Length: 141
Image 1 (cartoon, rainbow, N blue to C red):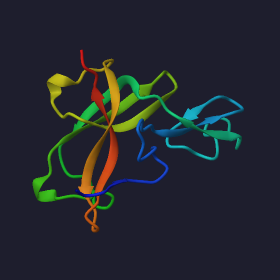
Image 2: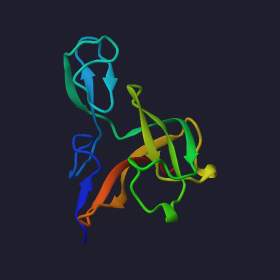
Image 3: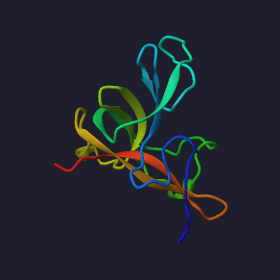
């Protein structure tokens, strides 16, 4: 079995029993951002700390990516490209996260629905590792 590696170190806790996205909170104005940043985009301060984000949120908006993104950064087999959902999920009224969605089925997505964080293989790297990224999936009804 191939090893699993994160698409980018520091983006989420990996490996982990309870993986989370890693954001940051400004200690001056309380703004939360993702991914983590050393400076605050709201107040321009640099008094931030790392914050693990929640695993559930609300689908704020979405669309279907129907064609392969430019490469780079896209990695993968363009000839066997499959459309995927992409959207913004608002986590705990703190931060909106741009994210891949686990479904591209129009009938399964609705603005305002509850979503849950998951992790999916994106492609295999040159060493044969499964490169893992985060995505959000519709919560079970």
